[in-house]
Amino acid sequence: MIQQDIKHFQMVDTPLEDIPKIHKTLRETFTSHKTLPIPYRQHLLLQLARMLQENHKAFSSAIHADVGKPPFEVYIGEINPMIDRAIISARRRSYEGHVDLPEPQKAWKPKVVPTPKGAVLVISPWNYPLILSIQATIGAIAAGCTVCLKLSEQLLPKYLDQDVIRVVCGGVPEVTKVLEWKWDHIFYTGNGMIARIIAAAAAKHLTPLTLELGGKSPVIVDPKCDLELAAKRTLWGKVTNWGQICVSPDYVLISPSALPQYVDGLKKAYEEMYPADQGAALGSDSYAHIINLQHFNRIKGVLLEKTKGKVLMGGRMDEERLKIEPTVILVKEGDVLLESETFGPILTIVELEEEGFIRKACDWVSERDHPLVLYLFSTDEQIQDEVRRHTTSRGLVFNDTFMQLDVKVLPFGGVGESGYGRQILENTFECFSYERSTVDIPAAAEEKIILRYPPYTDHSFKVECEPGLNVKIPESTPEGGLQV
Image (cartoon, rainbow, N blue to C red; front, top):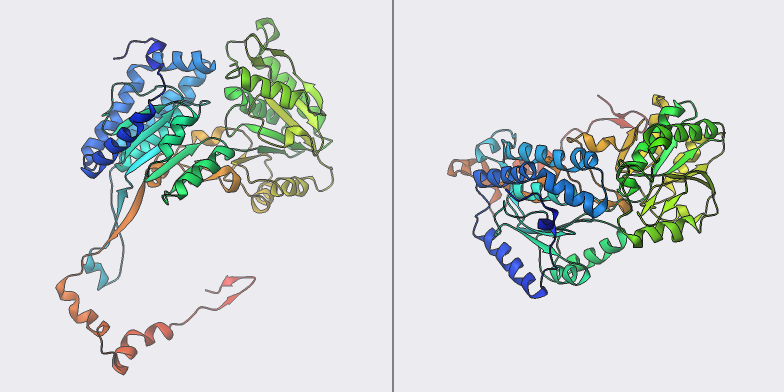
């Protein structure tokens, strides 16, 4: 077991001359078929779970020291889910699927076999340093790949086979060097600007990509919903990981009639979560700090000092502790806070006209980049359906924020500017494998397929081609579709 000392997670940048050797090792390990046996994959996955379970305090301490995240959020949002998902992946029963076909093709033994893509690259950010690297790694191991991890910290020490999983630490030079080499899949989590650079590098080798990019996740508030509860759940989603997560609610679309009660609800929820007699948010151990001074100054200077909006709640800052309290700002279209993902504890509110509010909110969302997730507070099924039909987002959550991540059977990913591909359990497995189709045509099938051989005759055309031309096409109408 690793000693529970955060120094064990500190690591110098990987020497650039080592990166080609790492790539060569992972490529050779994969081509040796070492990772193909299912028992070996299962063992690696369970070793990953053991590493997290036996060293949870060290991981929690390291993450808390690095990004200031409260231990509760580390365990509930990173460590515990990864232990659970590693075990679930190890218990996977089926690694091939049989295809149902009519005779005579059933005798051909048609199968779809998930096959590992090869040596893959996982690049993860700092805001969720454990889950965003380990989750992809779980899928890659389960699929039978070898993995190069580009991490912000050293988080995979002694438990895993170094021929199968290697860590590269560092910044731009190291990433640039890693991207020079051909990988069989690249899984990147981060922002759109870097994603374009990675996509361009991948295109040189025709390497497939998964991009999880985030963006501005909107909240639509139905005036008839429980406004106090909506406010509380929105604020919780915003303060989780201090707003520095891709699914954090970024801005709220609300009608004038609902605004006062909603803002009152935000203030009440803030006081309950961070009581004044306990130092409010700036003095609370349950509220994390901004990752570093650069990001603190970005939020302070680029956003808070340039906005023309009205501060409705919060706004206080503590530069020494890198803390900015949850801040709610009412803005108009065109404000700097609406230009890009805030990635911090700022919740922007935009008022739209009362009449036709839901449709106007849908139009607002549709006219902008497709978000990773859209939040709607409404129990009206007609409104839910209207928002579903008239907007585009990869996730759609009704009456809460953030909780889609708790439903581990659902795919998670982006659409358009928020990325492409999907992950979590089975979806991550599929990300790092391809479906290999197999058939085995017996000699006995020859009498059934004899007419495929030249010379072609009228008889062969009549038997093989005419049935497809004479098939009866069902009736249909624009309104009713297929007529049964």
